[in-house]
Amino acid sequence: MLRIFALLTALLTVAACTGSAPDDPLQDLGAFKLGHNVVIASKVQMVPGSREVEPDEWVTLLTNEVDARFSQYDGDQLYHFGISVEGYFVAPGGVPLVLSPKSVLAVNVTVWDDAAGKTLNSEAKTFTVFETTTADSFLVGSGHARTREEQMRGLARNAVGQIEDWLVEQNTAEGWFAPKTPAAQADAPSTEPSAALTPAAAAP
Image (cartoon, rainbow, N blue to C red; front, top):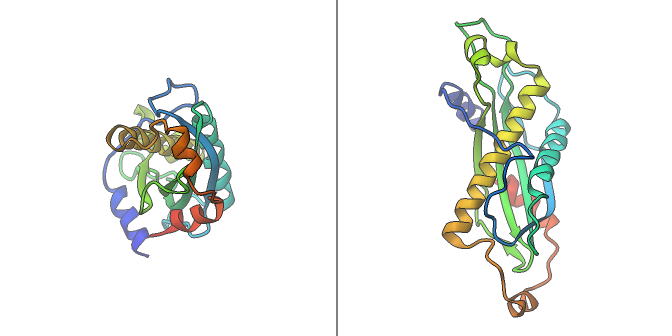
């Protein structure tokens, strides 16, 4: 319930974010290459009043959007994503100019360094993502201006954009994706990341 109340509070804030379309120019992610892309929605919560979305729909959509964007990075070091969909509100058709709620999506993200055999972030990073506001959706609400699928795709792409910006920041500040020496890669433990990513990404 705490997550639902947090999302409801977030809905009161007018915010917008421009997402990453698959064909946007790539950023500097060093030696990054996408490995496993694990998306789950087993604990997802829907904010009351939202258009309903099945968990599997979020899993499929986010998996595809993450793949479409991050598979373009052609570095030579593997990194794996664990993404958990935590909550959402897909705005219905409200009363234009009176009740025009914004859609929002909350996800947790964990990044696994394949060569090091460990996660790069000790705690899952939480993103609260709003849909991009256009002139039409600002005036009448996205529930009138967009289909449910368009709203979901916009949220997913904005999530990918925020994740990408965060990875760039972490690479700049912490050198997450800096090239490793062959000796360092040879000494790293061999560990299967898939099972470890899921609980880490789903942590509150």
